[in-house]
Length: 602
Ligand SMILES: Nc1ncnc2c1ncn2[C@@H]1O[C@H](COP(=O)(O)OP(=O)(O)OP(=O)(O)O)[C@@H](O)[C@H]1O
Figure 1 (tube, rainbow, N blue to C red):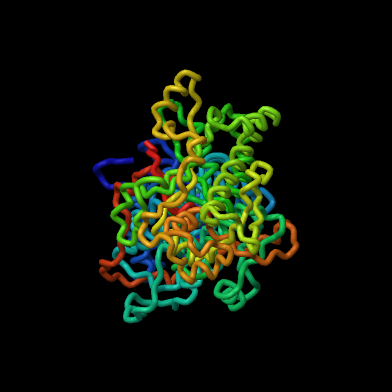
Figure 2: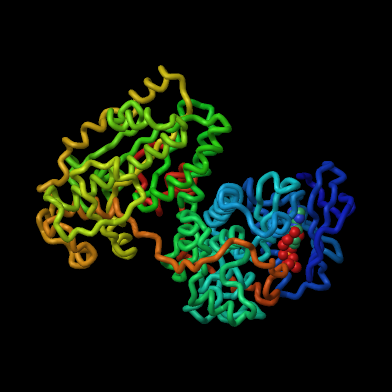
């Protein structure tokens, strides 16, 4: 819808009113010039306060910069004496709130992950890369492109969005049920200069990550997690209480939601990190893989370490059958437990100086390299894709455990006091002489330790190829040089490392009573790489997922509070264009498996 002369309302034939708000009206209309349907949003000038004017301008400024398949397209903005008009992509399926009602109040976990959360995270991640904060995540503002819930979901309504590179968000804006604690703590305001002087006020893009956690919970459970009868009670829930997780909620969405609903904004994973959570990342990765027709492409997905790896297995199992139905290829999974620092990370200021030799362990799990024992197990087992995938995943988990056991004990037999960590991996696949003796670091410890370490699990999802081409591809892969048999030969520690033989830091030992006091720095690095915090134990009161009565349609809490003080900012830094263009999945998974591995994704 591009043309040189200004648009006029006469260029549109209004067909049906879709919505009437305080200051706006929304019509389904057809553009007489192009013939396409649009959603025409009309702001009545007479009803716009000075603040609302600012808000509308900001909406136009921000929305007109957005182009993403999961964001409603912005076609045009124009005005006449009475109205400001926005011509937007028309979403025939209406909003997600209506869709939710049509479906009885909740959606399946798989649908939420694959069809809603994945796309929304990607769209919000895109907003964040541009420096914007959405601030208005809720089902009413997520539209569906096709009727009957078909088509794609799209974010709509950027009336509250803010450019965090230009303005400092200090206002309680949005819809209470979706507000993060740091937003709830902010005051409302009625004119631009209010609160400007309060340096301690303010929040970041992390508020959108929180809201997406609320959204995930609501879509699955049937109501927002902190919703209460009164606003005061809701405030208290948001600030201090953990949500109630119904027993029927599976581990994967629960882990995602509880991460997103981390009260501390500083500790909360970013949207980009949430994109890497197995619950949403793996379905997307599988879909992307299935869509690949070029045999040369590879999709690398970093699998999270064991405790989240179990989640990954569950998620993959669910989707494996769906992909099988679509004729998707069998998975070749390569697990890389490399402990060697990637050359690109050498310059990291706090880097542990790992030797360049001797710490490279790689477990190639492509079918060709699976040991006879595993292969036999696979043959015996049902040949379905799902079960072989499951077996491979379990084997990956147990291999890492084996590796970490050896590192933990520094080659010595396991101490008597060693505490076993219950794992969902199939221990029958583990070597008998590798008892589990892992303990879980506190989250803080793990984050600190892992910030300068590397080592991860990675899986390569190859598109299907004829056998001879697959063999050629495998031979060309740098991974092909190291086979499973090399694992046993690889030295596990390097006595030349600085600090070798020194006692572990007290802080780490406190969490690892069973660890050898002589673990080397490399061991600590390996540990940090292998161990991730268990999902925070959550109160799990028995309950079912019968959705409660749907709440009244929630509208913005306050139109008067939509303003933020324009203030030049220099502090906010966003990823470079180049970084943001790098392959989504492995980069995004870095939170869950903190060190992106060395795989080439292109
Ligand atoms: N592009 C669109 N296509 C179809 N329906 C839409 C579209 N945009 C919005 N709607 C419908 O209109 C409703 C309100 O739209 P929107 O959120 O943009 O208004 P608003 O400015 O937030 O109104 P208010 O602030 O007064 O609540 C949405 O919840 C959705 O049901």
